[in-house]
Structures are given as structure tokens and as C-alpha cells.
Image 1 (spheres, rainbow, N blue to C red):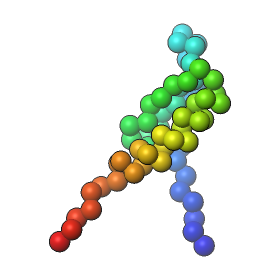
Image 2: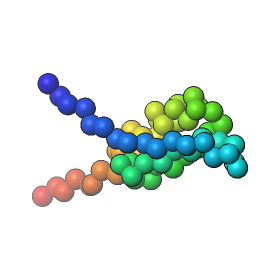
Image 3: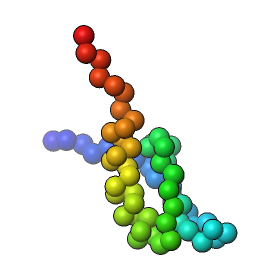
Length: 62
């Protein structure tokens, strides 16, 4: 059985900019915003996996 890895993403409403903002210490480079919470979730579904791949250390081939 494989256990799932949990990444914490913080989302908050920025009233001054009138957007939802998401950041995460668990996913380096994740900072995004969207007009609605639904749109924010859609963006995160694409961005989080992509950033996790990009943040992997390079393979060391000997």
C-alpha cells in the first residue's frame, strides 16, 4: 500500500486586489492568484505537480 504525501497550501482572500492568493512552503515557487476560489483550485491542480517535478534534485549519473 502506498501512502499519500500531503502538501500544505495556504489560500486567502486579498480584499485590496480582489483575488484569492495561494502560497506554500511545501511547494517551492508556488505563488498564484485567481478571481475565484474555483479558478484558484484549477490553477493549483496544474501548478503543484509541475512545480514538484521542477523542484526535484537532478539525477546523479555515475
